[in-house]
Image 1 (tube, rainbow, N blue to C red):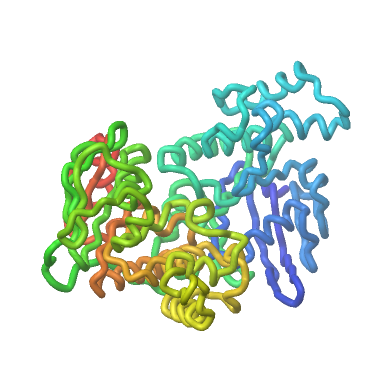
Image 2: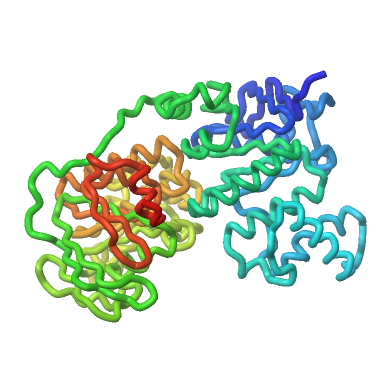
Length: 497
């Protein structure tokens, strides 16, 4: 008898003539952590929905613990032990932890009213399974992202799960939270629960999974043991492209600084920060969440105000008391969370792209010059290779990498002196990541001064011309990317060096 908890054979699925899956196969053994990888649009989400009963396949079979099905209904998949934890975790933010955990059980038992004592017992049992210490009466909206994810895991375990599918589970987590999550996943594995870990992050694939399956264009392109996989092969399977390791060196010696920061201090965030940044330089700032890195760059962009210190732009004192003042001084800022802070998701690609240059594109009485808007949009879509058929489509229709390019285009249309990028490739697939890195290096080569804030150490090493490590609100060391390593940066960031 097979040890497979899941076996998918020849699954095909089309939507309106677009073939999302083309005979995909996948096998997962009991107690295995299996990575499903691929770029955005490769068919990962469609395959997950077929396995969980959301979509009916056009062809192929699904086998769960030896039982074969042509299709599954969602409740049937749950009854068979299949649980999916999506990126948004599907929790109810306005309900308590207890209500989120007990609600499914109450509904499945066909109860009309929720009994508090019974619900609390269900919730207490759920959190005890992974040793999750949380106030059961706390409203979920007040919890950290990592805690919401643990709630989703606890809820899955209540359904006697045999296979838990985690869709991009680390997209919004810090490195410390990722480490804690991996501990939980390993514990689930020790109990014989299988995990299908959906990700495009190379480091995570190598660290957590034993076997992998990679999709491209709705087809299987590779599968096997992660021990037999390296970064270069992984990237090639994912994208069909070969990427050379890259780094950045300014073409010429740095000239006069375009940005000077002196003794900048904000109580509770950072203290006595000083640095210069010349045109053509890329300064990488890395450190753990809470190190003060985000508050520092938000100060330079006028979001928050320092208690003391000074900022000069182009050799002149800059009073950056607002975002508008920072923009007028030539500073642009791409935030770490493009979905809530960087984009107007229901609005068109065009509107998102030109929103920072409306004054320049307006004529007499503030009326937008339509032709100027169209020309600006078309120019930056072409220059940044933003993949869209129509700029009048909502920006939420784009992939993560293309959304990030829209945010970048917005600022590049603004004749910047300094561009600050906070987590520039967070949540984008590997092909888009390489493209964005190349774009950043190209901008610096043309004279733009760039600041990158990131805890993605390979990203910092690939893009920065110099790196500053930040810890507890202070710069602890400046490093040359050419002579340092990920290990050294990690040790300095955590303070264990």
